Length: 158
Image (cartoon, rainbow, N blue to C red; front, side):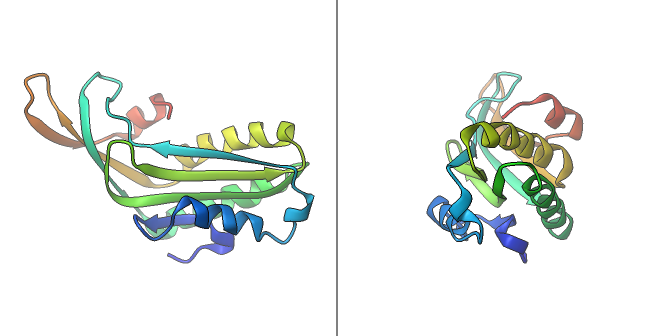
């Protein structure tokens, strides 16, 4: 899982938020930044159908996911006022409340950062081949698991 400029997929436990912030601060142009915007995606305890989520498994077509995340970051870094963009998606098994993804955008001003941060989140969800398996309890309390389809992913907002 080689990451150009630090973006990409990582196994759970390989990377923590302080590491990600430090990577952004080490960016060659960080001296031009006046703001860092951060999005942290976490495991929600209920899905859109109202089922109780016990946990998630996340897998990826790692090479293609790394390429997609790197491409998104490269393209967004070209925006006026943007200093750095990084997307770090974690893979593995997760419990409710655990971090899944870190998206950071550093820019000259906060007004530069927020629209790019939102676009980065929407784009990684649509473009990176990352797959989510939900472990839920049905209405009777029985456990079941299923992979969330592409159509469902497009309808859900983090």
